[in-house]
Length: 467
Image 1 (cartoon, rainbow, N blue to C red):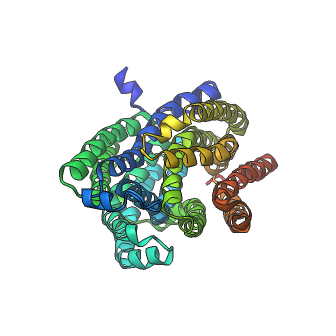
Image 2: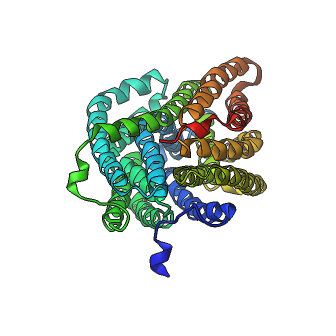
Image 3: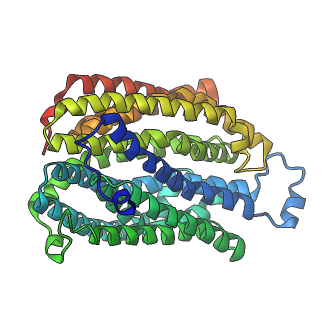
């Protein structure tokens, strides 16, 4: 029974909604664990980084004073869009690998599957080395360009430098867990992520509260934990000889497979790059509203991560489901699964959004003891609420198209909504509605993206993109 639980799942058999749901549930739990990485980072820096008593005494009558914990919270959050931008290469490799693995697994092609896994490992190593060499010197100039407040600049530099030097752990976990999920096994990736999450929490508290390493401590804790999770994924792949060959011979780059990984993964990586670029541009506007608003946005992003969990999980599940069934050339089953999976995603997303709105303020108060920050964060979250349900549609149908091999269409949808729509709306509304422009622009992006994605899916051109 235990062996069956951790074995790859053939999603070309059985009721589509059951295949999708049982594959998605472990990923939702995994995304909870993944979100805990950033959530615990934020809670720890907010709670354990304190001002010196003399600083608090001097600032007692200063209405513009921001506590050290809240400033550290804003520093960690400000690094998020930049860190996501650094990971776009690996998101692309992971997306290409997952699609190829799912289709080759569905088509029962052992040699092609073996070369795909091996080439992904090699390409990732090369990408990590290039990224560290090129980007490390650019961290400080980029933060200055984005108007990062002087009070948090050094913390941001420390956080991003440590994250970049240890980026191999983050990269390999995302890619290797994507390969494992492409084979239909979402339970193993969950287990390894849970191990890493517990380790991350313990190290966060030890480094920050015990060793007084401040923001650098949470970055180091995350890097170590993700290296452990990636090592566990590598060990799992080495024990799956029943389905493919995991030998040094298959690590040698082969042009056919590398090009295929890039062709399928580049649009997904570009999608994330577009989204992250838009966030970085908007981050500059966010920074202009002051440290308290920056911290409120960080709190919203942390709770937002939990609201988005079912959407991203169903998106990944639909990619694997569609990939395996396209590999088996059963398009009727793909369409049936797309409909059932989207209904599931919308229902679960609506339920989670309702819970978050109902218990919003207690959730916000976990991150900060500042009442003004709690109220501001809850107000911003209410603006976004309906958008989470719209994103359920976008992620599910985009997942189907990606699984079928059409990764270009979701990229163009992201380009249209994140760049052509969100940035002009954010900057255009700023003089009229003030800081609310950030969330209003994001809501418009999500709703428009759902409508456009549904139109492209219904046209059906994704059916011609199988590898």
